[in-house]
Length: 226
Length: 197
Ligand SMILES: Nc1ncnc2c1ncn2[C@@H]1O[C@H](COP(=O)(O)OP(=O)(O)OP(=O)(O)O)[C@@H](O)[C@H]1O
Ligand SMILES: [Mg+2]
Image 1 (tube, each protein chain N blue to C red):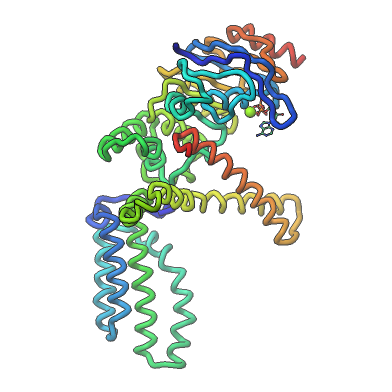
Image 2 (spheres, each protein chain N blue to C red):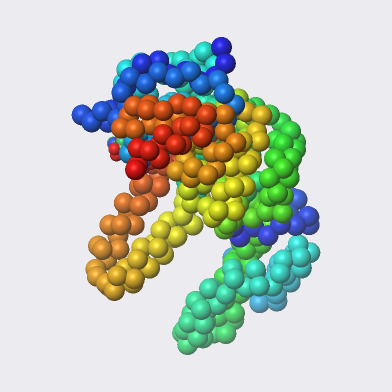
């Protein structure tokens, strides 16, 4: 039972319906979600790790029901937010990365070793003891990604991870995401970043209106806007 | 702490935070008990030597210590006026030494080490309080200082850009709203990072 599964998922905030009977089987490695503002992309993405639980239907990751086994699922699913400032919990870079392992019951040396390795991988070694909030926007998103990956999730969900970045850093973060061994689900408005993806899902007013390889899905999406 | 930490490998950097905290308290208590200016001079020399051994740059120390100099500039003349010079020197010296020692601690100790120390201190109370949670609360409080400072800065700028000055309320309301929004987002991040209770 691999992948992410939505079965007849509907959801609303208050009276207002936001998602309508969504069914999806996501097993591809690199999957994009696009759609207009307010179409329900973030709601969909946040369901994958249980930040939002659906009013109706069922979401499961690797066969585990998100609503019932939230904690277990969140160990499987790493989440990258749009604004890395909101994701930084600890004052310095190394401490923030280490925070992800706090409840894993690992030895101090083990944690320090893993932190050093992941900071090296993301080119942040020189900033280990620097204040996380003083990093540049691109470096902060790198830090957020490092903090997620150190916990070794099986799936990474990212909700507009490059929206606040310049073109160069957007490309860098996207390349890092698509190069991961993990399954990756990325919500984005930057269509040019989806070229190397395996599958793109188009959401419109809470429904899936296209679900295809990037070229065809993006063409459909742009057709909606025309 | 709060981005004041100055990385290094000196004895002072490597000493356990709890030990440093204990010595800090002890030295300050001793300073308060001392009666002679020359004794203060000895303690001050020790503090300066410690700073030198930790290779702390003068600028970093100055940033920490300079605010208290303003206080001294006002308080010492008052002491001279109403008491004698020994009282003035003792008071000024004690304050200076206390701030210098505290600066040595903040500049050589990471927040993580301070949190671990707090958790160790609270350990005897573990049966009644969740020490992990208190540690997290402390970390988040420290973390939110630069965040809220940044929000205040941005709101002030936005006000300037719109050419409004306005009341304290017009500053407080957007700051509070944005702080709450950022707190909610932080809550999501904590859940996503495995702190979901
Ligand atoms: N916590 C919430 N409470 C109430 N309404 C919400 C909440 N979150 C989202 N909504 C509403 O649900 C709808 C879908 O929101 P969602 O954030 O999923 O859209 P989105 O596709 O991610 O949009 P965007 O591209 O702007 O990020 C929007 O109309 C939004 O106003
Ligand atoms: Mg969104």
